Image: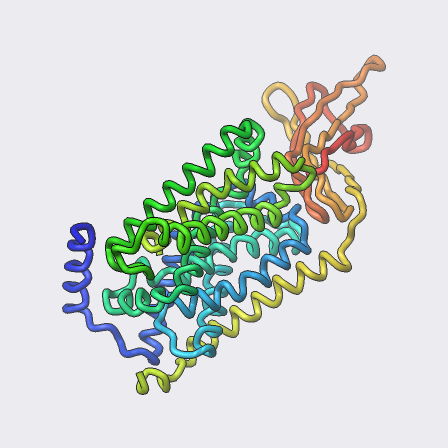
Length: 293
Length: 130
């Protein structure tokens, strides 16, 4: 409550002096587009500045990249439905917004990679498209999340209501998990950490992941924004929110590691270890999703 | 709610969304095409002289390495041999981090003697699969 105070005050002052253009006009859309670019850069920049991502752009398995692309489409449409850079009312709107986000993600990633000198003459089309295409995914998620970062209090309120359904809650956790896991998965450190951990460490990390995640879930719950009303018993929240959330975090972590070819030629123990290592940030992202998004 | 349901999508939004759809299908199409019908042949690396200039008290030979195979080569070692006077050869080597399929990367060798395009021998000696 105290934390939200100054923010709300600031947005109220801004909206008092600055009446937004009505929805459906080009002016309104251009404002939303500017927000989307800002979101794409905020979310995409850590990955645009990760060299493993540039390398994955040309040597990653094309079949897996294609699958990741196809899977990202329902995710983006869902994100547009639940959040999105404009409030949407109907699936046509959601799909249109999704492709706007793709365009924004592609253009912003392309421009930044070009400015970084990572796209040069002499590179094959496959390399250039691979590099930009891979970065388009996180950037489009960022473009759609832009509302969370720049929305007015009324828009925020509308989003929060939609997340109060159970599916909405789980979807939001998945997005949070992707948000944090995606920026760490391509780095070599994920595998290095997994190599160095013993089974005791792995168990400890699972325990810590659950504790941290539940702490976040509890914090959100007591703020009254969550799906479960505050005052629900510990075990009920733990079983209904924290455990499914952790399973989602581990699945996301496994999928991303597989897509980035981190799990190939790994023994089962290392594989498990790496999924749980990446599952840690994924779990924190899932738990904190209401604070991030 | 009713007023909002019927609010139209402005033309600018349709245009940007159309571009997005185009980009999405193009990237996806290229990836699927690459995965299904793409070149899966091992790296085929050719190295050629790009330029020769004086540098300090020696000579700088810049080379261009090209991979015509379908797979990316990592840590490509490029070697240059320059026959010097007296039957000896001057050698130099450089490592390129990555040489993706159908792409080019550049590097350079410093030689003490003046290299000639005809006499200098350039080749890739090893690589690692990424």
